[in-house]
Length: 345
Image (cartoon, rainbow, N blue to C red; front, top):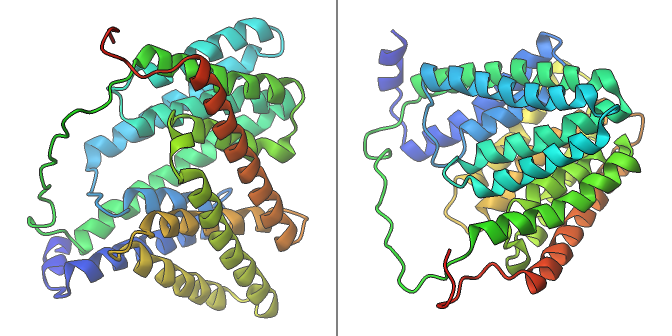
């Protein structure tokens, strides 16, 4: 019956994609909120990632694999966190191997390697500063992922893609591409991330945990110092942060659930429209929309003002970008990963 419903919705595929993206994220947010789940904004962010531009429905089998994969990755981080206080040297050696192989195993999708790297580095750190927090975060992430996956399946069922949209244009192979040594790239990743691990594990606090996460996130791109990704990330977070501040102050004026839903839909429509446009700023708006939900979650669970929360977040991101760019420029100078004609990969 639901599949027939999707066929009767006679709107363009572009509008379908916007509606899927917008209504999917808002629905996941509301379901998580109404059920009293910790940090419901994570459900919205997961949904945005699953319904992003160019994405298709995962299917039940892949959804179950995603849930089990998240649990397994998180469990490994919790396992390391269980004995990090008594075996700090051994834990650091294992983390060094995790960092190396996160860069080395390029056949594994980047999203999985990134999630594995972040969770493995984050959970032992949280075990040093707030032991029960890692368990709560993992449980919360799994529940919110289940909600996001269910909403995604339902969104594609109601607003399905056509066979034309699912066709992929073949990519042309580039001639004379620069080749790189994957081993040197992996070693450079260890050289960049490991000092941050040592600092945060021995001197860091929970106040700057976001900086630690962003260093791990950004460092997985070994050539970030050659691109404008870092600057775009700051701009995107600034846009999402400002939107979060505006929403927060409007809600303090009219603190009703109906206005909250209306506000989320209005701001979400603004971002969704720009994300599914043909402009070059699509990645900025995509990150900004996720930042908006993240800032709203931080504000609702923080004693600081909205402006202080966003300022601290932007400072942490700018610090992470600056560190990663400078660190990669230094280590690349001494360990250039480019493979020249007289070298082998």
